[in-house]
Image (cartoon, rainbow, N blue to C red; front, side, top):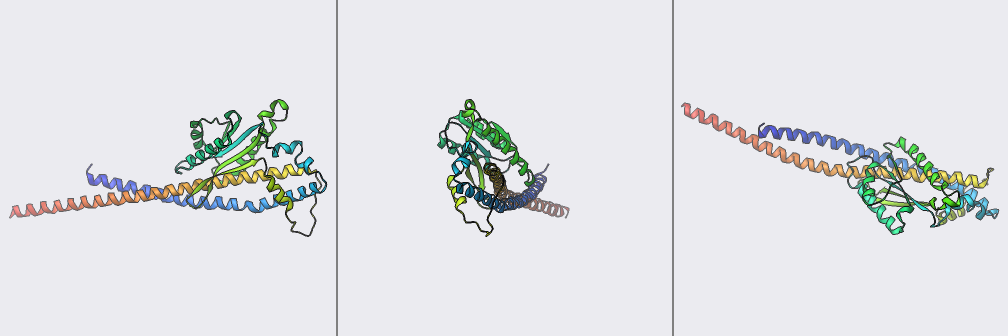
Length: 312
């Protein structure tokens, strides 16, 4: 194969790669917008849950039963800051590649934060979401208790959240007896990449349990907007437990949505770099091709001229 033919093939390959990269950029940008919209849509849902908590917490406080109901036997476990149990950690990575340092970034951040907590490995229960983050955690010496595939689309997030909530409930149920109290997960942290801009994301830590006391007090102190006095008929502890489950659902759904948006932002940045490199290579190949083609044409003209002069 001549050098000109080889350059033609290289140019063709580069053009095909350029088209693929452009398509991936478009898909990443669309995905970012889609996941951002999903996260934004949670605001009203979250507000509704907080209004419900406001009603029941206010009623409990009014009847001087705040300590017994919200911090009672069942809910004390959710609000406990005891160090006797284990710490649950859910780290969100990616299921797909070509997203730059996305997985390395969140794994390094999570590991650094876990080291700050100074928790012995046997007291850690780690869930890894996304297969590509597993190797980073295992290389650092962290055992993974459970792995989950990362949601591949917006429609898959709800089922994934529900599945993780079931496992969180199992974490909490382990301390139902004194003998297993040390196996109970009393703290839960979420680690995921939070979208910072269209092409940048930054690691983020969220404490799922114990609940933020200031957050609860803020909700209780909020002014009721409607002139209609709110009320409820079911037992307050049952209502609080139900509202908190919905609240945890929102936090996990947001973590999935923001992580997926961050993943696509990282992929978009990687594709922009790839597109620039391909364009530079394409310019280089095209320049070499034109030069060699021009040289070949010049040589052909010289041969024709020489043959003409010899014939005369």
